[in-house]
Length: 313
Image (tube, rainbow, N blue to C red):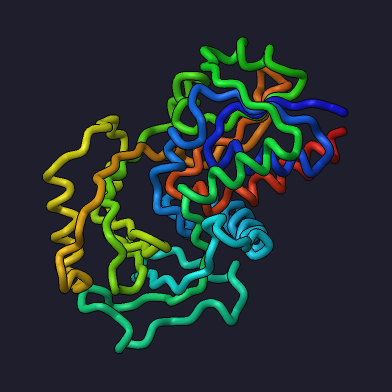
């Protein structure tokens, strides 16, 4: 059986590995940290193509991922389809709505809008709770015959030496690994709170003023921040206050949320996702730079990757 090594154990690495297993490859995941220590374990993980380019590719990946989540509904694995209110304005790119089944997306009625949002879509979209879904994927990978090795790769030469085919899913780690000047951190601070009796929503219409609530099975995520080229991994009390004040402005904070945890993560923002073979080390395929949309497009990227490698062979 041909073998491949996937580097990175976040949502992009795990989904890529599973797709390649389904294509008949023997897969090893090498990563400097387990899935439960990655950025993917910290996020809200709602299906929403936030801060990712190019849109023509993103929409295809997102659509493929949507279908995969439909087939991935299993008890207690963290996947559910929920109503999600998404604000938009005259400058918003709403192409993502065209990727959804027609019966799952519509414009919100005025009576459904909070006071701080003038126009929005309501769509039925996948939610994949990381604390349940990532362990489910990792167990699936292992049951499929996968191997995991905890190890940090220092440079492209070491990466290329791992196998005859290597898939680079290192997220923000690719900045140093590949000396990628286009890859930048987009700092996100969120609040994990007790579940709230409010609809899930996102308002990303104002740059630098991202606001959202994602209600999950046993908690909710309230966000957030989208500070570009910000390497600060510390929780900032000022950002917590900012997040709660924005929630009040929108009108979704009738009762103060009970905060369980304050979390910071750095999204891998890039001009566009790097999805290509390396120019120098031709056995390396790069799959990183998914911005704030890893859970939205990871399955789609994995599916296209599997098809590309099948044709190549």
